[in-house]
Image 1: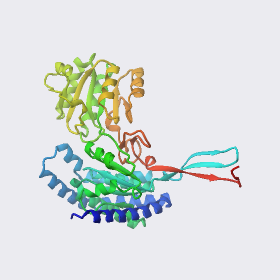
Image 2: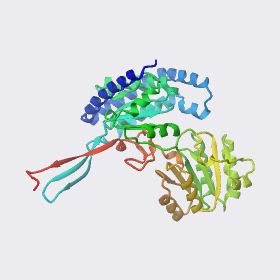
Image 3: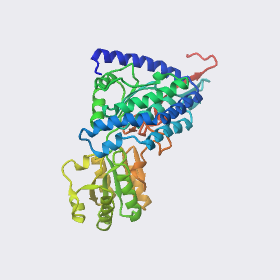
Image 4: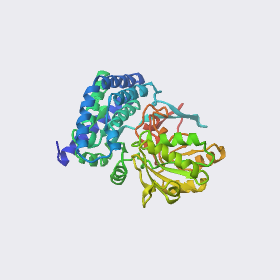
Length: 423
């Protein structure tokens, strides 16, 4: 159903008020109570798995009638294993230490005042995301554990699935005695809900967009609420001349093809000229066998002529598909220059057995996540031990890299005196 602008604004105001009240209750709840809510939500996801998959089938049916890519469809699709992964993610979050009431710093001033910096929830989170339905479950779990309420606006492509997930989570919260308003979703797909959330200064404390470049750009341009955003995942893997060839082949294949539609997938391969003539054909053959195609610079095509040529914008493209940009470089400085010029500060990796070169790379790239001898697909909150993630932050303020429980808290000060007055 479509609603007019006033009705949407009224819905958001009501939702935000309820979320504020829920966040206050969560902020003062025990870790055991929040963990019980997470386990109950996980139980409901498992119990309602069939309903989730049926709802997802409606979204897939609508998707198949359009012209989306196979990678996008993969992001949208649910199966029993992915439902179980969502549920297990909530259980994993429950098992993590309580992020609230942590003493971050503690000191005493010369006048005897004791000052403590204490972790606290942010409050009401607005999450705007696209396609991947598990994002809603992950965001709900992380916000619940960190004492925040969340208003989730998923993409219209996953509307039925998002509603089914929300229903399961809400049932779990109710059974655990926690406020259902801690996790809310709009009742329709109207894009005006996004505009209303972006304008909700004083109602929503932080907006987190998770999706393609156009979504993030719009949110950053229009928001009147602070934004914790990530740029596109234009991730690089650089194979240095001192790389172990077998390791390089394994890592590149995984970094590109494990899941092509995730933001941590490698989109550009850089390989040193000294080893490219022997190693690049092997890497290309490995990836071709996995269904990958290429957009290559002239030096790479001189070695593997079957690669399609790169064009203007190739090295600035986040493919999110089984396509890989390829360039031959003249050593680490050339690789670092390429990454600085074309990268998005998301995730970049080097493969080398030269520790000094690796150290230079890790210190020089400005990426939120830098890896040595590992796949870029490890840029994931669960792989960091965060239980899940609400996104990958590439900005410079508050949080960088996978955003987990700690990054969903702020802090406050508690001061204890013995009768001091200020002169």
